[in-house]
Each structure stands twice: as structure tokens, then as C-alpha cells.
Length: 94
Image 1 (spheres, rainbow, N blue to C red):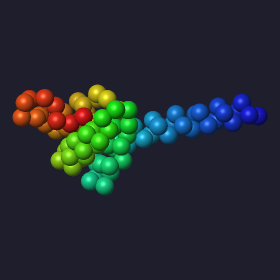
Image 2: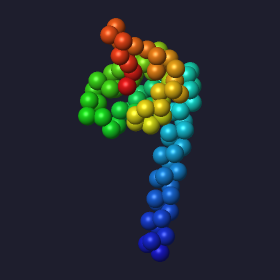
Image 3: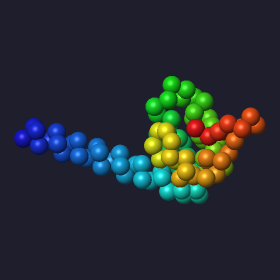
Image 4: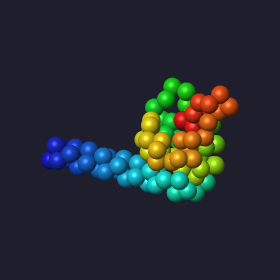
């Protein structure tokens, strides 16, 4: 019985995370400004530079209304997010 409960909980967590990622992978203009903070919290969850990541992610999300799925990469999902560069030519959005 305990093994069945563990499997059910694991399945639920995997399903919940997959659903969360799909919600924020909608492409440019798919988010409302209110949805930027939770999307950026997830995007920046694995970085050691969390404060800087959150600052720039929220700035980029406010402009583009999109945050790429996952915690790294996938920037092709949001061209505005991907193409916004610093004055030195590097990527502005994490």
C-alpha cells in the first residue's frame, strides 16, 4: 500500500511540473504582467545569481510578455526575449 502511494505521489509531481512548464512556454505575448513573477521565479530557480536573474527576467518579461520554458535555454520560444541585447552585444535576458 505504501509503495502504491509513493508511486501515485511521484506521478502527480511529475504531471504537475510538466503542466507548469507548458503554461509558461506559450511564446511571445502569452503571459500577462501578473504572470511574469512566478514564471521568472521558476526560470531563475537553479542559478547562483538569483537576484540578478530575477531582475533581468522580470524586466524582459514585462517587455516581451514571455519567459522561455525550463531553467536554462529554450530562448527560441520567445524571439523578443532572445534578441534583446546589452549595449555590448551580449544577451540581456537570462
